Image 1 (cartoon, rainbow, N blue to C red):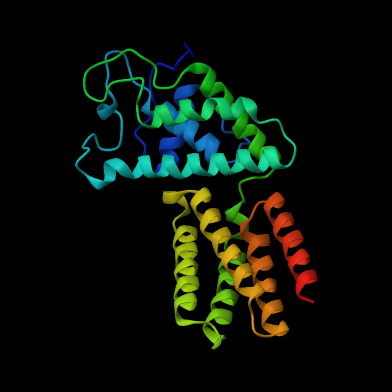
Image 2: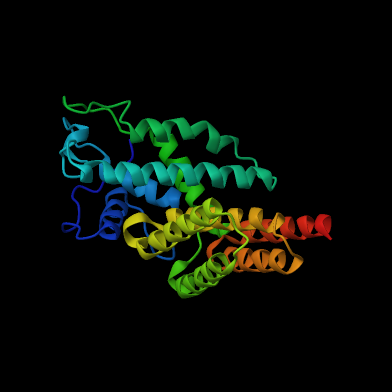
Length: 265
Protein backbone atom coordinates (compact mmCIF):
# COMPACT_ATOMS: atom_id res chain seq x y z
CA UNK A 1 0.00 0.00 0.00
CA UNK A 2 1.07 3.57 -0.63
CA UNK A 3 2.31 5.17 2.57
CA UNK A 4 -0.14 7.81 3.77
CA UNK A 5 0.67 10.91 5.73
CA UNK A 6 -1.16 10.40 9.05
CA UNK A 7 -3.33 13.53 9.08
CA UNK A 8 -4.81 16.09 6.72
CA UNK A 9 -3.79 19.75 6.90
CA UNK A 10 -6.41 22.25 8.18
CA UNK A 11 -9.97 21.99 6.88
CA UNK A 12 -10.42 22.96 3.24
CA UNK A 13 -12.35 26.12 2.39
CA UNK A 14 -12.59 25.69 -1.40
CA UNK A 15 -12.34 23.07 -4.12
CA UNK A 16 -8.70 24.03 -4.71
CA UNK A 17 -8.00 23.65 -1.00
CA UNK A 18 -9.59 20.20 -1.11
CA UNK A 19 -7.33 19.19 -3.97
CA UNK A 20 -4.26 20.60 -2.24
CA UNK A 21 -5.23 18.74 0.91
CA UNK A 22 -5.51 15.56 -1.11
CA UNK A 23 -2.05 16.05 -2.58
CA UNK A 24 -0.79 16.49 0.98
CA UNK A 25 -2.58 13.27 1.88
CA UNK A 26 -0.89 11.35 -0.92
CA UNK A 27 2.49 12.97 -0.40
CA UNK A 28 2.42 14.53 -3.90
CA UNK A 29 4.05 17.92 -4.39
CA UNK A 30 2.12 20.51 -6.40
CA UNK A 31 5.15 22.77 -6.91
CA UNK A 32 5.47 23.49 -10.64
CA UNK A 33 2.51 21.24 -11.48
CA UNK A 34 -0.55 22.49 -13.36
CA UNK A 35 -3.93 21.11 -12.39
CA UNK A 36 -5.22 18.94 -15.22
CA UNK A 37 -7.97 16.31 -15.28
CA UNK A 38 -5.68 13.42 -14.39
CA UNK A 39 -4.08 15.27 -11.49
CA UNK A 40 -7.46 16.54 -10.25
CA UNK A 41 -8.89 13.02 -10.31
CA UNK A 42 -5.83 11.67 -8.52
CA UNK A 43 -6.27 14.29 -5.81
CA UNK A 44 -9.96 13.50 -5.47
CA UNK A 45 -9.19 9.80 -5.05
CA UNK A 46 -6.79 10.78 -2.28
CA UNK A 47 -9.53 12.81 -0.62
CA UNK A 48 -11.96 9.89 -0.97
CA UNK A 49 -9.56 7.22 0.30
CA UNK A 50 -11.01 5.41 3.31
CA UNK A 51 -9.47 5.25 6.72
CA UNK A 52 -9.43 1.76 8.35
CA UNK A 53 -13.00 0.54 8.91
CA UNK A 54 -14.41 3.53 7.00
CA UNK A 55 -17.04 3.70 4.25
CA UNK A 56 -17.57 5.74 1.10
CA UNK A 57 -20.46 7.83 2.44
CA UNK A 58 -18.31 9.10 5.28
CA UNK A 59 -15.70 10.77 3.06
CA UNK A 60 -17.63 12.03 0.02
CA UNK A 61 -19.33 15.39 -0.28
CA UNK A 62 -21.45 16.26 2.73
CA UNK A 63 -22.04 12.54 3.51
CA UNK A 64 -25.69 12.96 2.49
CA UNK A 65 -26.50 11.19 -0.79
CA UNK A 66 -29.96 12.79 -0.76
CA UNK A 67 -28.43 16.24 -1.35
CA UNK A 68 -27.40 17.60 -4.73
CA UNK A 69 -24.12 18.77 -3.26
CA UNK A 70 -23.10 15.20 -2.47
CA UNK A 71 -23.18 14.27 -6.15
CA UNK A 72 -21.56 17.47 -7.43
CA UNK A 73 -18.02 16.18 -6.94
CA UNK A 74 -19.01 12.90 -8.61
CA UNK A 75 -20.14 14.92 -11.65
CA UNK A 76 -16.79 16.68 -11.67
CA UNK A 77 -15.03 13.33 -11.53
CA UNK A 78 -17.06 12.12 -14.52
CA UNK A 79 -16.10 15.27 -16.44
CA UNK A 80 -12.44 14.67 -15.58
CA UNK A 81 -12.67 11.03 -16.71
CA UNK A 82 -14.29 12.08 -19.98
CA UNK A 83 -11.50 14.59 -20.55
CA UNK A 84 -8.90 11.94 -19.69
CA UNK A 85 -10.35 9.61 -22.32
CA UNK A 86 -10.28 12.45 -24.86
CA UNK A 87 -6.65 13.15 -23.97
CA UNK A 88 -5.71 9.47 -24.30
CA UNK A 89 -7.41 9.37 -27.72
CA UNK A 90 -5.50 12.48 -28.79
CA UNK A 91 -2.18 11.04 -27.58
CA UNK A 92 -2.88 7.81 -29.46
CA UNK A 93 -3.75 9.72 -32.64
CA UNK A 94 -0.41 11.53 -32.40
CA UNK A 95 1.49 8.23 -32.29
CA UNK A 96 1.90 7.72 -28.52
CA UNK A 97 1.52 4.23 -27.08
CA UNK A 98 -1.37 4.64 -24.62
CA UNK A 99 -2.06 0.98 -23.86
CA UNK A 100 -0.95 1.33 -20.23
CA UNK A 101 -3.44 4.17 -19.73
CA UNK A 102 -6.32 2.35 -21.41
CA UNK A 103 -5.82 -0.69 -19.18
CA UNK A 104 -6.33 1.44 -16.06
CA UNK A 105 -9.31 3.55 -17.17
CA UNK A 106 -11.79 0.92 -15.86
CA UNK A 107 -10.01 1.03 -12.47
CA UNK A 108 -10.56 4.80 -12.30
CA UNK A 109 -14.26 4.35 -13.04
CA UNK A 110 -14.42 1.67 -10.35
CA UNK A 111 -12.90 4.12 -7.90
CA UNK A 112 -15.47 6.76 -8.81
CA UNK A 113 -18.35 4.37 -8.14
CA UNK A 114 -16.63 2.68 -5.16
CA UNK A 115 -16.93 -0.75 -6.79
CA UNK A 116 -14.15 -2.26 -4.69
CA UNK A 117 -15.24 -0.75 -1.36
CA UNK A 118 -18.46 -0.40 0.60
CA UNK A 119 -20.77 2.59 0.58
CA UNK A 120 -22.14 2.05 4.07
CA UNK A 121 -20.57 -0.92 5.93
CA UNK A 122 -16.96 -0.48 7.02
CA UNK A 123 -14.18 -1.78 4.77
CA UNK A 124 -10.39 -1.96 4.62
CA UNK A 125 -10.19 -2.35 0.83
CA UNK A 126 -8.34 0.44 -1.07
CA UNK A 127 -10.57 2.63 -3.21
CA UNK A 128 -8.30 2.30 -6.26
CA UNK A 129 -5.45 -0.16 -6.71
CA UNK A 130 -2.01 1.39 -6.23
CA UNK A 131 -0.86 0.53 -9.77
CA UNK A 132 -3.82 2.42 -11.25
CA UNK A 133 -3.01 5.47 -9.10
CA UNK A 134 0.63 5.35 -10.22
CA UNK A 135 -0.42 5.26 -13.89
CA UNK A 136 -2.82 8.17 -13.29
CA UNK A 137 0.02 10.21 -11.80
CA UNK A 138 2.21 9.42 -14.82
CA UNK A 139 -0.62 10.46 -17.15
CA UNK A 140 -0.93 13.78 -15.29
CA UNK A 141 2.74 14.51 -16.00
CA UNK A 142 2.32 13.45 -19.63
CA UNK A 143 -0.58 15.86 -20.08
CA UNK A 144 1.63 18.62 -18.69
CA UNK A 145 4.28 17.83 -21.32
CA UNK A 146 1.82 18.07 -24.21
CA UNK A 147 0.12 21.17 -22.71
CA UNK A 148 -3.25 19.43 -22.76
CA UNK A 149 -4.78 21.76 -20.17
CA UNK A 150 -4.94 25.44 -21.20
CA UNK A 151 -3.77 28.01 -18.69
CA UNK A 152 -6.95 30.05 -18.34
CA UNK A 153 -5.31 32.22 -15.71
CA UNK A 154 -3.45 34.03 -18.47
CA UNK A 155 -5.90 33.62 -21.35
CA UNK A 156 -9.28 34.00 -19.67
CA UNK A 157 -9.78 37.59 -20.86
CA UNK A 158 -8.84 36.60 -24.42
CA UNK A 159 -11.36 33.74 -24.39
CA UNK A 160 -14.12 36.09 -23.24
CA UNK A 161 -13.17 38.48 -26.06
CA UNK A 162 -13.28 35.63 -28.58
CA UNK A 163 -16.71 34.63 -27.27
CA UNK A 164 -17.89 38.22 -27.71
CA UNK A 165 -16.74 38.19 -31.34
CA UNK A 166 -18.56 34.89 -31.85
CA UNK A 167 -21.77 36.28 -30.34
CA UNK A 168 -21.64 39.39 -32.52
CA UNK A 169 -21.22 37.22 -35.61
CA UNK A 170 -24.05 34.84 -34.65
CA UNK A 171 -26.55 37.55 -33.74
CA UNK A 172 -25.70 39.59 -36.84
CA UNK A 173 -26.12 36.74 -39.32
CA UNK A 174 -29.73 36.97 -40.52
CA UNK A 175 -29.26 33.99 -42.81
CA UNK A 176 -28.97 31.57 -39.87
CA UNK A 177 -32.04 29.43 -39.20
CA UNK A 178 -33.60 30.28 -35.83
CA UNK A 179 -32.89 26.80 -34.45
CA UNK A 180 -29.21 27.02 -35.43
CA UNK A 181 -28.86 30.46 -33.85
CA UNK A 182 -30.43 29.23 -30.59
CA UNK A 183 -28.10 26.24 -30.52
CA UNK A 184 -25.00 28.35 -31.12
CA UNK A 185 -26.02 30.87 -28.45
CA UNK A 186 -26.69 28.01 -26.03
CA UNK A 187 -23.17 26.67 -26.60
CA UNK A 188 -21.79 30.18 -26.22
CA UNK A 189 -23.54 30.74 -22.90
CA UNK A 190 -22.32 27.37 -21.63
CA UNK A 191 -18.75 28.30 -22.56
CA UNK A 192 -19.10 31.61 -20.71
CA UNK A 193 -20.57 29.90 -17.65
CA UNK A 194 -17.85 27.25 -17.39
CA UNK A 195 -15.15 29.84 -17.94
CA UNK A 196 -16.63 32.00 -15.16
CA UNK A 197 -16.72 28.97 -12.83
CA UNK A 198 -13.19 27.64 -13.25
CA UNK A 199 -12.58 27.11 -9.55
CA UNK A 200 -15.79 25.15 -9.15
CA UNK A 201 -15.96 23.26 -12.47
CA UNK A 202 -12.31 23.04 -13.47
CA UNK A 203 -10.51 23.82 -16.70
CA UNK A 204 -11.62 20.61 -18.41
CA UNK A 205 -15.26 21.70 -18.48
CA UNK A 206 -14.38 25.17 -19.80
CA UNK A 207 -12.14 23.80 -22.52
CA UNK A 208 -14.73 21.17 -23.52
CA UNK A 209 -17.53 23.75 -23.80
CA UNK A 210 -15.34 26.15 -25.78
CA UNK A 211 -14.14 23.49 -28.20
CA UNK A 212 -17.70 22.27 -28.75
CA UNK A 213 -18.55 25.80 -29.85
CA UNK A 214 -15.48 25.79 -32.12
CA UNK A 215 -16.80 22.65 -33.81
CA UNK A 216 -20.26 24.12 -34.27
CA UNK A 217 -18.88 27.37 -35.74
CA UNK A 218 -16.72 25.39 -38.15
CA UNK A 219 -19.74 23.36 -39.25
CA UNK A 220 -21.79 26.52 -39.82
CA UNK A 221 -18.92 27.96 -41.85
CA UNK A 222 -19.03 25.08 -44.32
CA UNK A 223 -22.66 25.91 -45.19
CA UNK A 224 -22.39 29.72 -45.10
CA UNK A 225 -24.20 31.46 -47.95
CA UNK A 226 -21.24 33.64 -48.99
CA UNK A 227 -17.43 33.26 -48.95
CA UNK A 228 -17.21 36.32 -46.69
CA UNK A 229 -19.44 34.76 -44.04
CA UNK A 230 -17.63 31.43 -44.37
CA UNK A 231 -14.29 33.11 -43.72
CA UNK A 232 -15.77 35.10 -40.82
CA UNK A 233 -16.95 31.90 -39.07
CA UNK A 234 -13.63 30.16 -39.74
CA UNK A 235 -11.76 33.19 -38.34
CA UNK A 236 -13.70 33.31 -35.07
CA UNK A 237 -13.46 29.51 -34.69
CA UNK A 238 -9.67 29.63 -34.96
CA UNK A 239 -9.52 32.63 -32.61
CA UNK A 240 -11.48 30.71 -29.98
CA UNK A 241 -9.44 27.54 -30.51
CA UNK A 242 -6.19 29.44 -30.09
CA UNK A 243 -7.25 30.93 -26.77
CA UNK A 244 -9.25 28.05 -25.27
CA UNK A 245 -7.75 24.90 -26.80
CA UNK A 246 -4.58 22.98 -26.13
CA UNK A 247 -1.69 23.37 -28.58
CA UNK A 248 -2.31 20.06 -30.34
CA UNK A 249 -6.04 20.73 -30.67
CA UNK A 250 -5.50 24.21 -32.10
CA UNK A 251 -3.15 22.88 -34.77
CA UNK A 252 -5.71 20.22 -35.68
CA UNK A 253 -8.47 22.85 -36.00
CA UNK A 254 -6.32 25.08 -38.20
CA UNK A 255 -5.30 22.15 -40.41
CA UNK A 256 -8.91 21.02 -40.74
CA UNK A 257 -10.11 24.50 -41.66
CA UNK A 258 -7.38 24.83 -44.31
CA UNK A 259 -8.52 21.54 -45.80
CA UNK A 260 -12.21 22.54 -45.76
CA UNK A 261 -11.45 25.88 -47.34
CA UNK A 262 -9.51 24.16 -50.11
CA UNK A 263 -12.61 22.13 -50.91
CA UNK A 264 -14.95 25.12 -50.98
CA UNK A 265 -12.81 27.40 -53.14
